[in-house]
Image 1 (cartoon, rainbow, N blue to C red):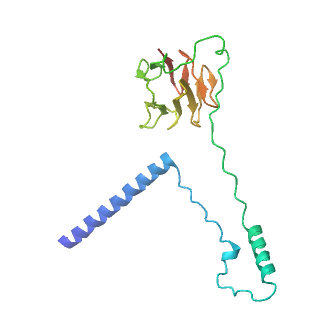
Image 2: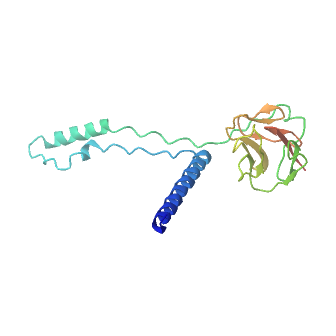
Image 3: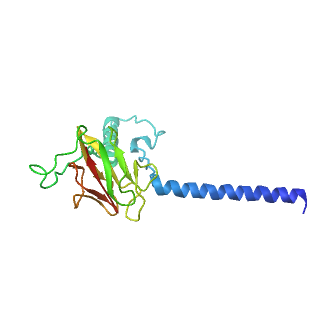
Length: 203
């Protein structure tokens, strides 16, 4: 085999390897971030569709212009109202308003303690930043089991109190046995279950 043929084969193999790497990276990006949504361009206004139309020179020019403007306004789609801002709705946990443990705050909760699961006994210090929980390696608390979503839930501070929010996970997030459907205040020493892992916020 000549040196030229060997060089061509090496270059072809290298190009095929790069194509394979690009396909893998694109698939991983689509899995993590989803497909990019393309915005549809607005249809051109009827008044601007014929820029070379001759200028009216008759006595009915004003009426013709008014009719054209009315037709353009009728043809143009009405602009949708701006979406209302999403404000978290907090659902109090039954039985914790007047009795039971107090709500976890930035002053009385200093650690997250994992009480069951593969990382049982582990502790994470709580700060002022929110904590994300899931199978993704960029999560603050990484839980790798078959019942945990890539981005499963988030612990965040609202005012000075800790709340738990489910991030549309497949198997759900449970606070004291009740499934979380909206951001909920977290009481101290109350179990939060995600997949096969449970944890509590403690002093």
